[in-house]
Length: 541
Ligand code: BGC
Figure: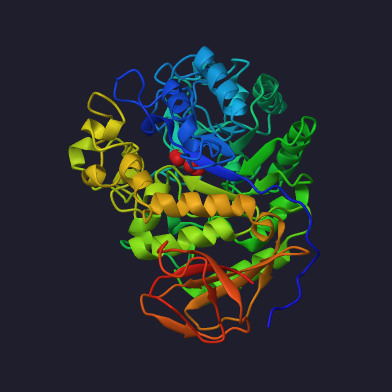
């Protein structure tokens, strides 16, 4: 029944990256905001060697640099310093050292498209038209009638241009007006950014997640973006009224990324993860220029596609097929900008999604708290801090509901802090937290831990190829992971009804199911097998 594998097994980096939103992970100094010392405190939780911990290979920290925090740290005022709310350089050095001691890599979030308007470069740039830093940013004269230079929009609402009265020019900001876009056509900007990457690499960081890379170059002559014919006024985000072909996605970005990639490659096995929400064709453009298997374009498709086994199969088969041997696949289910999986798919399907994520090849991403099945937290209006909330159409309540404090125990403030945290803790924290779930052998945390252990110990899951299988039912996704000697079959029921399947395996050993109960270890005959509603199973075959 199984089809032949596309290529023979080879080694590729299989890395579990755990994304930490530092403000919300653990507050060590009781000011209500998470910090680096808090992360250090919790490294044993992330480490797999202690047997109680989760067992991740790398942590990616959302930005920790000096920032006025207008956009949760994605507005950087100094790329070479730590924000005081997170701690000091000493804390960072200690974090790096402690993480490395446990074999955990540390990945920083690097934001090249824009800085904070408080960055010294921008303060100088703004000070006069002839300041040497003027050209670090994108300044344009108004149109004759005084209006903005073109129709480009900010992803966070309104025009992408802000008028500066004293110097009588507009500057460009693809996000908030407090996040002016850098001018990547100025070679000095490129030089500065390369030096910043080198600074952190020399300090020993293991790589970067690079923010909004598709935006760094804009059309050289600033043509308007054309109208989007599919746009529905009053329904869609007004940002989607235009097709953003001139305000972003220029081919010149690949030259810069090649240079980043080359720089990282001059060190050993440094990770580069670039952010653009795009399809397989779009990802291929990035893969084509990355020569290291440690350099990947983020694959957001599993979080964008409808929860439908046929749609997922088509995507996975095509994506895997599109990859060259040195291209490492990667998979994301959630992050600090998107809904929690349990809120998007429901808690039952979330477990099936977790099994899928943890049995696929390559580099996978776990957003903090997903291992506890945290949900989007409904917040009272007065508690919302993310200014982007009002206009968010894709995520009700904006992004704060997915950035609430990590739930460590059933004590006050869920053990995140001793004082009231910057965002409220979810109401369910007394039941849903690390302490209770780690004691419960049927919890989502136990499922994550078990699947992570399996991913490390099972040779087929560790090194095997992805081999597509014909769907045994239109609601069931089935695939094989196989290396030269071992073979594992993954069966995932995407529906909330039981499904009968028939596959040509008579002696399959059930090594994990999403309910963590009946049947584990049992030898089953899959020619006649019933998957329970929302059940996922991994079989040794
Ligand atoms: C980040 C967002 C941020 C934006 C602007 C994104 O891609 O993930 O959180 O607001 O870039 O930096």
